[in-house]
Structures are given as structure tokens and as C-alpha cells.
Image (cartoon, rainbow, N blue to C red):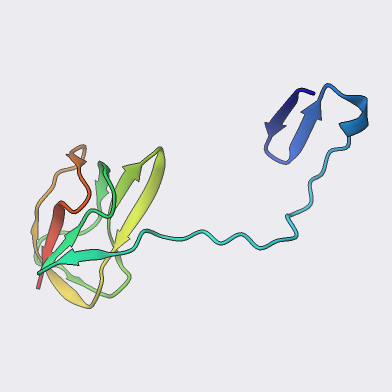
Length: 109
């Protein structure tokens, strides 16, 4: 049997499976955000990837959960949030830079 999946429509080459469904899944799907990892006063990369966007500036006050930057990993955009209410002291990476797991990204205090 050959199956192609296009969004909510399923197209098959077998007549027995030609029914398409657009209903939502009956089991809830939970999407998790990457955990905030800190080392001392720095927010670190939770996984290797590429910095797509930096969303804060040095000297800016941030609130817990506020997105600091966007890290692309495995073709997914991961927003890295602030671990607590703080001030951005230094941004240690640049947009377009590749980072490794555990690498410091932003120094906070």
C-alpha cells in the first residue's frame, strides 16, 4: 500500500483505505518547549543549533518566561525563555551563529 500525507487529507492507492479524515486527533498532543538551562549567570543552549533571532538587547529588563532568542535545531524553531526576572548583561552570540549544547548564550544578572 502506498500512502501520502498532505495536512489533514490522506491519499492512498488502495481502495480499502480511501477514506479521508479532517477531524482532530482524539488523544491530546502535548508540545514541550526546551528546558531553560543556566550555568552561573548565563542562559545556555539546551541543544546544538543555529541562532535565528535575538529578541532582547543588553541592559534590557526581562521577565520570567520572556523569549530571549530563537534557536533552530533539526529544522524546528525553539524559543529560549528567561529563567527568572532579570537584566540582560551581555549577549554572547550573534544571529546566524552555530552553537553547541551547554554553550553560554546570554549573560543575565
